Amino acid sequence: MTKDFNLKNTIEALLLSSDEPLSADRLYKIISNKENITKADILDSIKGLENDYKSKEIEVSRVASGYRIQARKSINDYLNIIFAEKTPRYSRALMETLSIIAYKQPVTRGDIEAIRGVSVSSSIMRTLSDRNWIKIIGYRDVPGKPAMFSTTSEFLNYFGLERLDELPDLPDIKEPKNLDLELDDQSSNQNKESSIPKSMLN
Image (cartoon, rainbow, N blue to C red):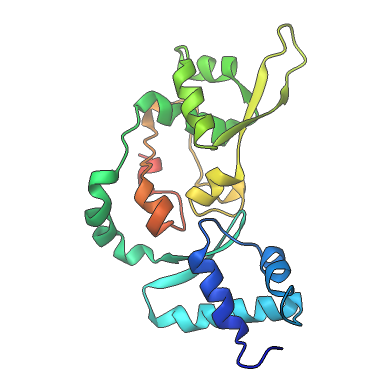
């Protein structure tokens, strides 16, 4: 290794500088271009960072796309004050639509409308697509070939999840009006909360 090279410090700097999570494979490819390391070295260094942060209000979190450094939930109240003015507001219809897709995927637009009992506007689907929270994964083999939607890894990253089975249990998805996702940009850009907000379930 290069003189004075510190793998743990390098990984920390990369995670802090990246605007998206980095997987162990990605970290290895980046660093191994310059240094003679193994993937096991990467994982050991990440564990070292986790230990370093045990007494701090930041942590290394693993989400769908890899690792990221984020603030702990214990300081959410302070972060909410800082970013309150930047919090976007979403309609209840959009929240319900996203919840249905997350819990019942893959679903068609018709499935969503059948559950909600009302039509889904194109602007809602466009907003969810623009945020890269949903994607088309195929077309149902029925007349009209409707598109089937599912959530994306970006959706999991936003809510601090590694897998869909980490979503909280939902008593009855047929009552979507009881769902209230609190979606806010401060958790995406600064806080990156490590779990679905409690307000997802009323």
